[in-house]
Length: 219
Image (tube, rainbow, N blue to C red; front, side, top):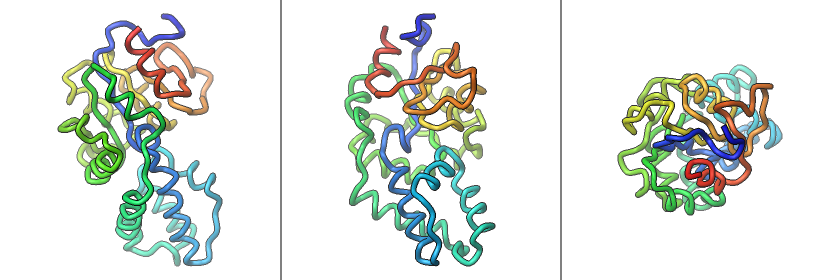
């Protein structure tokens, strides 16, 4: 296999959403930090990004509740969702190159995200990409499995009607890449540090620009 391309016969592209298509992770971290700061808790933005990227939000909240029980009330998740939606409508931007990429791709594609469907749809709508994914969104909340569980990625393959070996997953998190590996798809890790000596390998390649996706799947 060439180091510049994924293997032949890639017939479909699966995108993560947060941090891959839309720049929502930094805004979400801002909201969590604001909510904790209201109770006198100060954490760094980098720390919050590291502990939340690609993980199930309920697990993150459970961890925060264990550490800061007075700051994380029962309505924390509902409050977070409401606040982030307001912030998204004011400030959310697509990841650089994302809109051009989905407009240029001529392969079946879908989104597979750990987020609830309404959040995925809102983020894609705000950034102008929702029409490209009409009826092609897979939410972990509907599958009942969150990355790194491969079930979410396999559900995306089923939605595309393709075997995993003919799909490529574009991901920005370790959990997402692990889900892709376990599902048997090819993976393009976007701006991600490789935590394992096996990365990059036969089925995992690292990219720094979303424009590289076109190069890898069309060559």
